[in-house]
Image 1 (tube, rainbow, N blue to C red):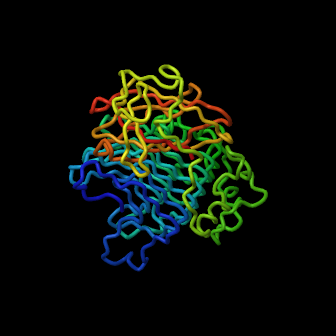
Image 2 (cartoon, one colour):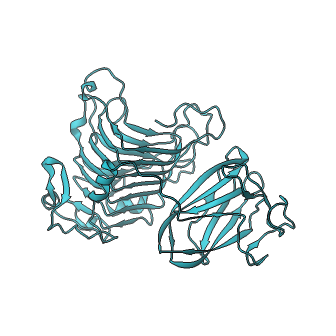
Image 3 (cartoon, rainbow, N blue to C red):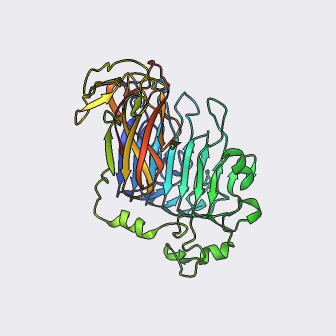
Length: 445
């Protein structure tokens, strides 16, 4: 569990967490004993998390509903309103023998918190998500996921899920500080899912398209195979095999071999021309390979190295002179950084300003942009343009606790073409300190 008791250090969030190649379990002998059993992995106050290459098993109804993994911000004692769960990647894992998969909540339902955002669940195998993991006085829902209270940017992609609950995904309203319960930025793509009785169900609204329209406006729902579902209930662009056909697509369900048979219509049928469901080559590599080093960035750019050409070409600054007095002699404010590696940073940054960086990408693709930032209070917002097109939407600099208390924020899914491009970082709004924040470097990976 990451989070829990409120931290004594203001604005502290567990950051930069990797959980890789572990066997995470509980003894099943505890089921009928007096242990207080809740879940297997829980995030209450965490950001920039990767959970990869693990086997996660044995979670049943007890002190909680038996969901194995929780993404639920908790301002436990009410003294940590900055509590947040964001930027989590859960990929290439096996989850089995559980009463439920994920519980995802947008906000703490009892005390102030920040909004859960940017949760990616991709290329995982889930089986024996089953009502068998009930106890005499508590029935297991056996859902793949329950999602409520309006999280933002939830992506579920290339998973294979074998569950027997009445619904596979339940989306509900719950508490939000704005009473907006919708999930903006929801993506459900390339998954092998069972419909059972209700499939994807919007609480008090209905199954399929009705629930999705209400709770996940403008969602991307494509190239999923919903076993046993009626095509009339879901968006077009998905597949609807019978339950018998869905099960026959696998090599051997009884032996937990969920690879697709050669004749499966789900082969090479995903949005990225791969098999729908799990890529077992990637899953096996994550589970069995020697630990991989963190990929090096494609390139890293120091913020002080913006384009030449002066005002209106390389940058736009709203105040005269270089307040930091270092490195360059134009109007951009540059000071010495005490971050790892030293160097310089852009400071005294105000809304309406921008800086340009001309780069050359060797290949086109979809990348993650990491940005090293700091702020002594709640920071402002900015966005990143590539060749004049906004690629990120508004990004917020958190309160890091000091002008040189550096942290890394990330934006996934940024498309770049090959060759020369101009990246422009545009300052949109000032924060509580009267500025946007400090900027050290950004990296594209």
